[in-house]
Image (cartoon, rainbow, N blue to C red; front, top):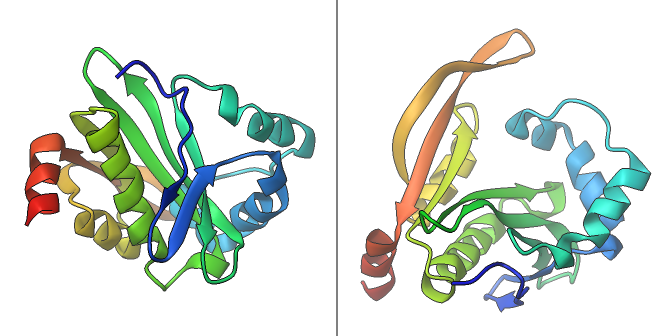
Length: 185
C-alpha cells in the first residue's frame, strides 16, 4: 500500500460508493443538519458554506484519506459518506467513520457501505486494522458495525455530555485476519 491517492468507485447491491466532491454539498449539508445525525456524531455548530464547499472540492486530492459518497442505487441520491481516515502507514491501520442522512436510513445502506469500504481497505489497500468509535446511545450503528466484523475493544466512560446526558464512547475495530475469515465463510 502506498497511499489513498486512488479514489475508487465501489458498487454493491444497494449502494455505490464514489469519490465525494463539491457536487455533494446540498445532500451532505442536509444530512449533517438532521438532528439524529448531529446527536449520534456529537456534532455541535453550523457548517459554514464556503469552507465546507472547499473541503469537499479537495477530497479527491488527499493522499492520506479516502472520502466516498454513499449513493442509494434505488434513487441515485447521495445519502451520506463513508471515510477511511487517520491513516498510520507504519501500523497499516486507519480510522473509519460513516454518516447517513434520513433518506438513507433503515434499509441496510449503511451496513453495505461499511462492508464495501472495509473490504476495500483490507483486501485492496492491505490494511491490517480499521478502527472506529460509536456513542453508546447509537445501537443501530453498533449493530451495523458488528455485522461488518467490528469487535468492541473498550469504552470511554461519560465521554460526551449531550442534552444533560452523559454518554460512553465505544471503541471497535476489525483486523484483517478476522475479515478474511468472515469473507470466506
